[in-house]
Length: 205
Image (cartoon, rainbow, N blue to C red):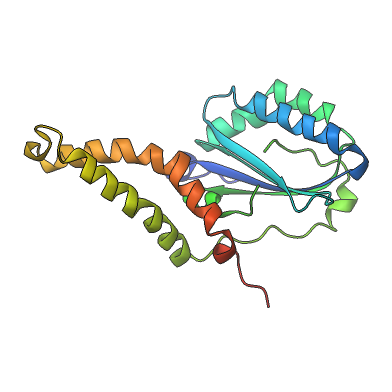
């Protein structure tokens, strides 16, 4: 296996999963997945997760979780706690397909937690491929739609602060990015991508 470049290894990594769940064991699977999220949440670098079913009667679940880097993700995926958790879920999942993405692209995956047993490798071939990320221009538009109003609101709020306009521009930019980056990452960008999900979804012929 080829080692990742240093820059890529330090980027956030999103794991997107499509799982086919045993329809007779939905309540058990729900509890199992949530317990996996609770375990992952205690590990350094965990940035969040989510999961949805296609519809009320579907046994296809889309799941997603994110860590701050390859190293923190690997620490979780090779942990004894996760190994024990996977063993507890044996028989709940019929098949799965997973994909890793680095950086911002992971936020644009099909809506989603947990992690990853391959219980029935033969059935996995029947699963559909995970959809590709949207075109870069759509990603750029989505990020701008989130960043512009947040940056504008912050500028209006900061202007009346005594001494703000007298600060060097580099210091104002530093303060702005320190405040807005976590707001964009944890709240605004996930909200915008959910709102634009249908537009971001790749067109099928």
